[in-house]
Amino acid sequence: MLEERTGLKPISEVAIKEMQEKLDHKCKPISGLGKLEILADKIAGIEGTVDIKTNKRRCLVFAADHGVEREGVSATPRNVTYLQAVNMMAGHTTVAAIAKANHCSVQVVDIGIDADVNDPKVLNRKIRKGTTDILKGPAMTRGEAEKAIQIGYDVAQQAIDEGNQVLAIGELGIANTTISSAIIAVMLDEPVSDVVGRGSNISDRRMQHKVDVIEEAIAKWQPNAADPIDVLSKVGGFEIGGKVGAMICAAENGVPLIMDGFISEAALTIAEGLYPGISKHIIASHASKERGTQLVMQRYGLNPLLELNMAVGEGSGAVLVLSLIDAMQSVLKNMNTLEDLDVIFTK
Image 1: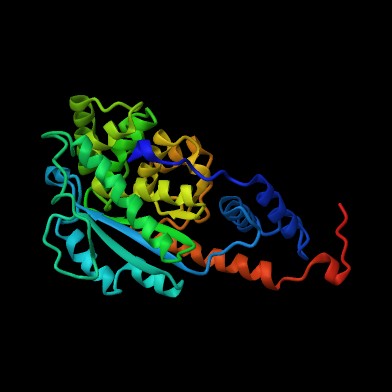
Image 2: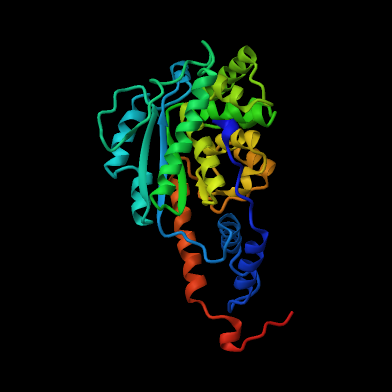
């Protein structure tokens, strides 16, 4: 799969410049809309035009369980992954509610839930029922890691083929902050203790246990940061692989992809390892509460649009950004230009 890729669609510097010129001619101070202007520029660069298309959008939520949950690293019970997958497609979770307010469809993808999900609304792409406990063995085989990426790619491609112009990605998976911390620590070569956060609001004791578990797993399996598939297979998760594939697909197609929080950030480190520069194609939605977030943002030069102290996951922060995109589209369509009003700003 990875050897067959055609390459990322180049970012259009011309479109970025034209978009900024268009914004500069609106009746407002230069850069007066702050991050909203940066957002418009980025989408223009990704799509390759100032006539950006963002009306039809879908949030892809990859769901999978983790063997390491059995080590007591999370305060949330394992069956919540299954329960929330079904609940989400019924429209009753955080991301489902926010997506509805932002005219965004949601698709849950079962890529590794540790249960039989008998709900036709949940897309069944299960690799197996959860990963291996990373203290007992590598999380998955190399072939399974590659399969997870391929599944994410294919699901994203289907969404694009169905006319979606913007993708958001989220996840479900108890203990996935543990796995994400392990990936980020390896890929960025940072101490585990500088990456790990409280996840599901765990205690100090459990947080130290979480650090110990990750450090032991990394010491046992020696994931190689120069080989991102090796890292994903040894200390990763199926849903993270799915997100990697979705990122690659969107970047190849020139479709803006909004990533959510910490779990998406872990996926981004894998995607960057495979395709350096792919972060230029990704919109960072919000600053997660997890400690490793700033390390990822600084490494790839990303600036999250929102800082709301969120720690829900699911893609909730990603779909919130759609409201900012809609606001910017309204500015582009409805706001007067300086020429319309014969206004000249002086320095």
